[in-house]
Image 1 (cartoon, rainbow, N blue to C red):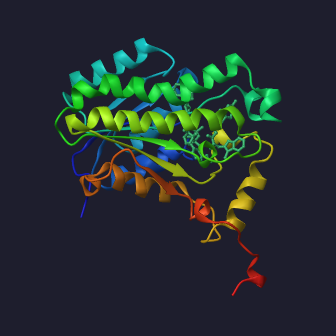
Image 2 (image 1 turned 180 degrees about the horizontal axis):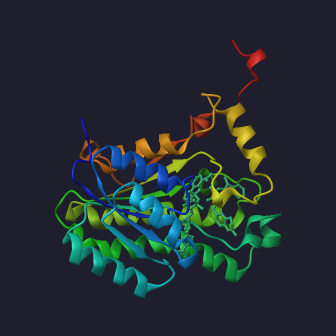
Length: 265
Ligand code: NAD
Ligand code: 0WE
């Protein structure tokens, strides 16, 4: 059974084969979806084009979500090629490097805070705004990828955590306003995964080890697991679910305390 047969899907946020967006694309492709991809800039163009070919994608466009003109052009291309669209996947986040280290109160700046919120949160609303006319009354679905740092304080995540809280609120307000047009909006809250966005973050290995030890499943999640949950939440199987934050984190967020294996039982 294919749960996304002939659904037309836009994927924003592939940078490499390790990207969470790649896992989402692979799972949705497997479920019968037709894919469109964007790349942030020329530096990523050839890599994303190669990945798009792997999934026989019909549309590949540049889209820097900081640029309204890029977003407008993107949906105008999609309208020309597909007329309508069923699913939009947002898998984008950015804060300047200096925001992701040290104590929050020391590192936060007006500019860093503003950029993080623009690229990581407002961009979801910006994409939803332009997608809306192509999605109306057709069981459309929009999803974003978030992280538990929105609800709990973690070392170094800092301004990004505040931006993720804003992203999750944006999900709820979009769900509220687009629901009457038959469009659902949700987010998947993924556990830590080693992607490009995680490279260069000094405490990341410690995060992976801690999550593995503390989560009920005693494992870190994979982009395949996040991809499969994404395919579900965007499919008609999830038609009763909107405004929801679905955790795909091996249960990490549900735990108060875990004991090492030798002390359990
Ligand atoms: P990634 O580096 O593979 O993907 C991040 C993407 O954001 C890249 O494709 C990059 O090009 C894109 N991007 C950044 N600025 C952009 C801009 N101005 N315009 C267009 N695109 C832009 O890393 P990832 O881990 O797959 O991140 C994807 C999403 O998953 C992000 O929202 C991230 O916060 C979230 N997330 C990641 C983890 C993790 O541990 N890796 C956990 C939970 C949530
Ligand atoms: O959302 C993220 C990371 C997103 C991200 C990554 C970077 C690295 C390069 C946003 N902006 C930038 N800016 C850069 O210059 N995650 C959920 C992964 C992540 O990042 C962390 C984490 C986790 C988990 C940073 C510090 C602590 C934990």
